[in-house]
Image (tube, rainbow, N blue to C red; front, side):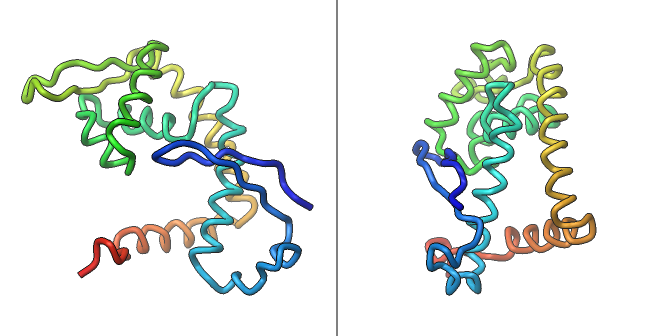
Amino acid sequence: MARKMIEEESEGGEGGFSLAEDGAELGTSSLRGYLGYMLRRAQLLIFQDVIAALEPFDLRPTQFSMLMILSTRPGLRQAELADLLGVQRTNLVKMVDALESRGLMVRERSLEDRRSHSLCLTSKGGSFLAEARAAVEAHEAKLADALGTSNRDELLRLLTLLNRNFIPRDRGE
């Protein structure tokens, strides 16, 4: 049975994908041994749920990530935030504009480098983030229930290891 279409966040825009309960229905069972394919399927399922969790807040997952990072690193420069999130700087500017217009963050000229901007959450942004974070933590609890706590922890450990050690061909030696 096909799952409902979901939007996928990307650096350049959005697109739709549908998923089936069983990859065999789509003739994809031969792909189940490929890590990239299975990670992608899992990512799409997880994003479908987190997008739904954040919908009442009119917030996208990347915007939530921006607020989370700024809650622990106030004054971070826009360029640094873009690098941490892996998004293009021009796309980040649009997201900052949207969150700033809602009164959730402020952008100020950096004292160290007047060509760049520092970002900080507003008090409204901090309160808003606490509410959105509760919704995302409920989403995370669903993932832990699906996997079991020890498997969830092991998956996080393995994904962290992959993120640290894997070097794509375009950045490889």
